[in-house]
Amino acid sequence: MSAESEKALPFAQLTTPYSKLAGDDMFLEAAVQWGTWSILVLWVAGASMATELSRPCPQRCECHQETMEVNCSRRQLSAVPEGLSGDSLHLNLGHNRLKTLGRRQFAGLALLQELDLSNNMISMIEVEAFQGLQSLQTLRIKSNRLKIIPVGVFSGLPRLRALDISQNEILVFLDYTFRELVNLQQLEAGENDLVFISQRAFTGLQNLQELNLDRCNLTSIPTVALSQLQNLTRMRLRRLNISVLPSNSFHQLHRLRDLRISHWSSLDTLASKSLIGLNLTSLTINNCNLSTVPYASVHTLVFLRYLDLSYNPITAVHGNLLADLLRLEEFHLAGGSLVTIEPGAFKGLAYLRLLNMSSNQLPTLEEGVLHSVGNLETLRLDRNPLACDCRLLWVVRRRLRLDFDGHQPSCTAPDVVCGREFRDFTEAELSGFFTCRQARILNRKPQDVRVEEGGRVLLHCMADGDPSPSITWMTSQHALLLPTGRVRVLTNGTLELRYAQVQDSGSYLCTASNTAGNDSFSVSLQVSGLPHSRNRTVPHFSEMVWTVPSIITVTNSSAQVSDPFPFDAKTLIIAMTMGFLSFLSSVIICFVFMFLWSQSQGQIKHTATINFVPRTSKGGGAGGGDGNDSGRFTMKLI
Image (tube, rainbow, N blue to C red):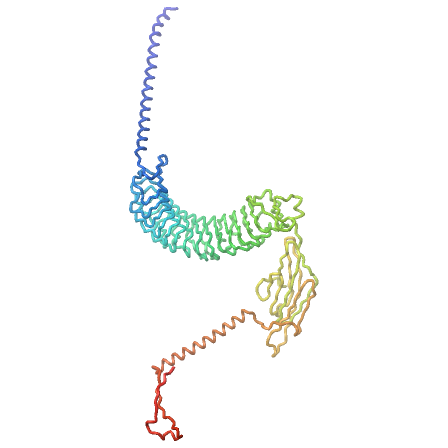
């Protein structure tokens, strides 16, 4: 070992203990710091525990420290309990026996966010009862006995977002009832005895987004009151006794997006401008009494995406009347009385993806009713008397890709496939079952019908086919004949001409049509005029019938049974009514004239005194007696 190394050794021996000493000091310093933090944490925990232990809780309530909730529900309380902690966030006083709320009833609960007073017996709330609840966001006073809400009850609630006053006995909303609730977003006011909503009742609710008015005694839409709700986006009106929805019912609600009208059992009419001014995306009018789709009312709703007209007695959807609903995606017409859906009924609805026609009386749904079958994703046809023929072949072919929402359609006819669901058919069976037979007129023998003027003509057009063909009639001028009027098409397809006239002469085209094809046949009619005769008082009626397979028979003889009355019952009733009114007016005029004449004669005496001389028994002259023989009597005039 060198001398330098020996000299360095004592230095190393000296420095080693010094380093060890320095490490020990650092350890002690860390221990001191750790102990300080531990004491601090324990102190905070102890303070917190002390605070929790010191937070008051009413004797008959439950307090949950983690949620800052005080639950006093179902405690048979007849008054708001005392000793509530000022830092409580939720207070439940539901299902008790509270009857009144006094002024500043909840003073000291400045942090409270939710207050539930439902299912009590509250019949009176004093003005400023909720004063001091500046943090309250939800207030429920559901199922109580309130009959009126005084103005000022809701003062002091600047942050209230949701208010539920449903299922009370409130009769009227007065002006400015909700004026202080400037931040209210949801108002539940249904199932009250409301008969009137004042025009300024909703003044101040400039931020209200949802309003529900259900089961009340309103007989008309409170249009003026609703016009105050400029930011309303959702509104529900259920179980109202209103039969007609008038024009401009919601004309100021430009931001309304969802309107639900439900269970108006007497609603059968929507005025053509009843929904004018709305920009709805969702419209529900179900469980009402509409007999037709309200085309004139809904055609302005160009932003509509959802339309529900279920459970109305609607019998048909007509063609080419819904094309203005360009954005419609869902259409529900379940539970109605649908029998017919005309071709082109949903023409123009390029985005329609869900069609619900379940629980109706539909025998079929032809592919031609839709704008595009490819866009359709969900189709409900269950619980309909479906005839499984070629008209439904397009549905069955898509049975594996099309969503039936868990409700498979099934066949009702023909008998060979009755009860079978669409998913049960194999591809090989489709060509054998889902077929149609073209419409065919049974008798095509040329017909030439002649009848005298004033006669009655019946032209029967009988046809066969599968499905059963429909019968239409057209004149030689290509005018389609309707089921009303003097010349009309009866429900069985027969063409009737009453009181035939010379100008009715010409050809009439009968067309039988079904899905598989059409068949037409022309009939010629010649109406001859009758010569004028003084003895002709009653028109002569003869009947011309075109039957199949019988030969045409024309009868003009007097033996033909004639209708003794040339006028129908309606004409006779009108004539008798006019005659009776004329007679009655004449009698009234006579009585008025007699009354005026009697008034002009001055006061009328109702008694008369008559002097007379009795005839003698000896037959002497009238002047033969003395003055004692004269007599006098008084009569009362009636």
